[in-house]
Length: 359
Image 1 (cartoon, rainbow, N blue to C red):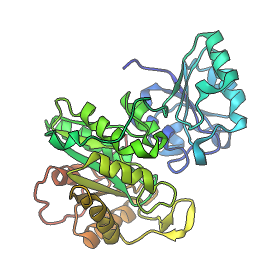
Image 2 (image 1 turned 60 degrees about the horizontal axis):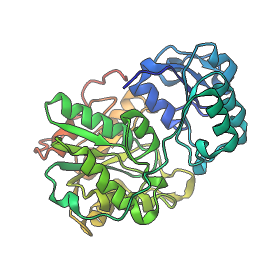
Image 3 (image 1 turned 180 degrees about the vertical axis):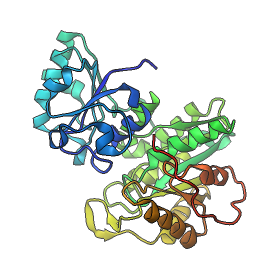
C-alpha cells in the first residue's frame, strides 16, 4: 500500500471520543499524518492531544495544513447521521484546488456532490467514498458454514467501544504467534486501514448478513482465523439492526465483547442504561444461538481515559463479574484474548501485567 501524506479533518472533535477515524489512523498509520485540522486544539501536536502518535501539528485552517504539502485530505470524524456539514465544503474544495485527493467515510457521498465532483475532475484528483457499498450484494447463502476458518466477531456494549481497534490488535497478535489470521473491515475507518471491506451501515438492511458472509469468504482465503470488525451494539436504539445483521451473517465461532468502563448509558441516548456485563454477554450469546451457537470468549476494555490504577481495577472487575478473560489490548496487551479466541483454557485470572506503551 502506497504511503500518503495525510491531513485529517477533525474540526472541533479531535479526541478518542469525538474523532474515531482520525484517532485510529494516527494509531495505525501515524507515519503518514502530516497535520490535523481542529481550530479548538490548534497550536498543539497530535501526540500532545492524544498522548501517542507523531509530533505533527494540529492547525486551525486548511490553508495552514496545505503548507505541509499533504497529498490527501481524510475526513476524520463522522457527525451524527454521517452527513456533510456545510462548514466543511470550503475546506474540501480548497484541498482539491491544491491537488489533494479526498477520502471520506461520510454517508453523504462526495463524488455525488456536483460541485465537489466537478472540482475534482478539473484538478485530476480522486474522491474515495469509503462507505459506498458494492452494487451486487444480496442475502446470505450459508456458504460460510462450509468454510474451515475460525470466525471471531467483535461485539460491543455500545457504539465507539473499541471494536475496530480490538479486531486489529487480535489479528496482529495472532500473526505474531504464527497463526494465519486476517481481519475483515465493516466500517469506514477499517476500510481505509485495511484497504478493502464493506461499510455495512450503508448496506440495504436485507443484505447486511449477505455482506458479512461475502467479507468472510473473501478474507478467509488461506487464513485459519478471520476476525470480523463489529459495528454498533444490540442494545443501541439506532444501530442494533446493523449489529444483528453482522452477527447472523458472519456466523462466528466466538465473540469478543468490547466495553468502555466509565460509560453507564448508551452513547447519545442518556435515557438508555447499559446493562451489567454478564447480562450483555447473555444477550449476545442468545442472539447468536438463533442461527449458530457462539460464546463470548473474552472482554476487551477501552481504558484510555482512566488512570493506570483505575484501568487495572476495571479489568479485574470485568473478569470477576463475568468469569471471562479481560484486558485492554492496547494498554496491557492482547494475550489473554488470543488464548480465549483460540479456545485455549483461560486458567486462573490474573491482574493485568505491566502496561505497554501506546502505539
